[in-house]
Structures are given as structure tokens and as C-alpha cells.
Image (cartoon, rainbow, N blue to C red; front, side):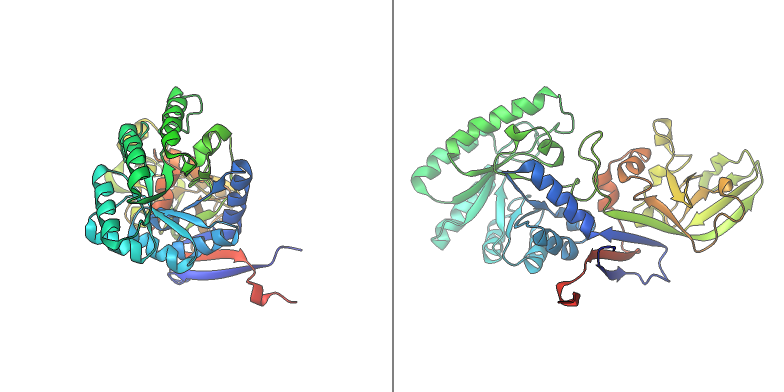
Length: 393
């Protein structure tokens, strides 16, 4: 028998929506558990910034918690508040650090752990802890070569030596971020690892975290105590040849079927000229819904480097034709035949038949961007394991 499941619907009502998202939280949990096996004995945190990569913190966090996750990373405090509501007992790290002394009080009150990225952050947190008379926890982010956020290795070592004497703050995690983890043989990975190890010696036995999804696959030398896979949990490929279970399926509803003669043009700019009599499906999703204009079949600069994107319907890939517009995308469905598709049908934009990484490459972007840009006009269906209260004893 099929596994029992529960569906929670959200967003625009299904009969009114131009597109729909099917979000399989069971697959998300399966991906998390698979990554946890690779990471063991290191732990695996849940990276749920950007509203859980566009999927929704309120649904993703409880699903990850049920799979054994008790530590989460967000980018901003507001996201941390949402995680706290969804998983009250969890550890929550805020990656973008502190924006001022007034923010520090909010972090402490909400039990959010700031990631210290600058000397200014460190001064703010030390001053706040001093006023409170308590050394509140924080994470120390050291820049080992990403040149994005983080204090320098020298600053980190000096802080470790000083704080060993003063105990002004309570660092509970040392972390960094690899710049080229998706390029397995890049020598920068080993260089950053050695810098991180050297800094770690100054902090002793404190928990440490270096890798994201791609870095997790570099081997146990990189795992330390805590890993932070993101895109792989949500179904994106962490490395070439590595396939995760599909979590998100995005589909667009067909608003109209058009029969267009050879020689006519499609969409803005008349950039796509039909070479044959064609059947065109006009689907009710566009760049306002987060489906990139760069996926257009013609008429955008990126087409010089990447082919246009595709949809999938009734067992076939169907090419995007003409420019993607704000609310509509056109597909050439001629090869399906006159009876192969109808108004009201749905065309898959990415999902089990059209992997999200492939759809992203066709648009000259990455799966992270496709997910985090998902708009609010979709109907959303969240599939989870059957709730315990509905199971028979």
C-alpha cells in the first residue's frame, strides 16, 4: 500500500491560481536524513533562510525537526522569530550578525544566537553582555577566503586568547564558508580548510562548522562537528552527478491554446518567428511569479550563451517560445498534436520530469534563485506524512 499522507493547501485557491506548487515535505525529510548519514558523526543543521528557500519556514522547520534537526540557520532576526514559533526548543543562529546595540537586546530576549562577522559586531556583543552581566552565546564567523562576511583569522585568534581570560562573551560555534566547494578539486578548498583548522586550535574543543551542501561531499576532513547543507535538502544537486529527491514541483496553468501560422511572431519584440504552422500554449505564470525572463526562447541577451528553457506536459518536453512576460509564458506544443493539450491543463516548469538544476541552467542561473524567487500567486500544496492524530491505533 502507498504511504499515508496529508495535504495542507495554502496560497491562492486552486481554481483561481495561474500556477501551482507541490511541496513534498516527505522528500525534504528523506534528503535531510540521507545527508545526515553522509555527515555522521557530525551533526546537520537546517538552513532555512529566505523563508526556507522560498518554501515556507512554517512548514519546513517542523518537518526538519521531526526528522531530527534541532539547529537552524537564518539570515535575519525576523526569520529567527518564525523558526522560534515553529520549533520552540531549537538553537537558532542568525548569519547576518548584529546591526546595532538595540538589536542585541532583541537577540537575547528571543534566544537568537548572533553570528559575529565583524570587529564591530564583537564590540557590540561584548558591551551588551557586560551590561547584562551575562555572557550570552554567539557564533564566531572567520573569513578563510570567501571575502564576504567574517572577521580575519588574526582577529579570531586574538579574540580567542583575550576571551579566555575575560569570559566577556560565550562563543558556542566557530564557523566559516567555502568559496569553491562545488568544484571538488579546487585547491582553495584545502587552503581554506587549513586556515580554519589553525584558527580552531585557538578555540580548543568548541563546536565548529565549515561546509554547506557541496562541501559536505568533500569528505570527513571538512565536516567538523556541524554541517550546514542547504540546497540539497530542498532537492537541488549539491555536485555534478548527485541527485536528490524532488521536493518542489512548479506548474503553470494553460490559459489559452493558439493556432499560429508559419512566418508569424510570438511575444514582445517579435523575436521568435515561427518556421511552421504551430500550436502555442499560453501559460499563466511569468516573471512576476519568479519564473525568470531569462528562460525565454528568444530575444534576451543570455540566449547567446544558453538555450531557451522548456516545460513538460503529457510525456514531452515543450520549448518556451518568445519572451517570458510578467504574467504569461508561451510554449510550443505543436508536437503534442491538436488533442494533446487543452486550456486548464498544467505545464511543469520544474519538478520530477524537468530537474530544477536543468531548468535553472537553461535560464543562466542556479536552483537557489529559482526557489527563493517563487511568488505568492501560486496555489501551494504541502504533502507530509499522515498526522499522528489521524492514524488508527
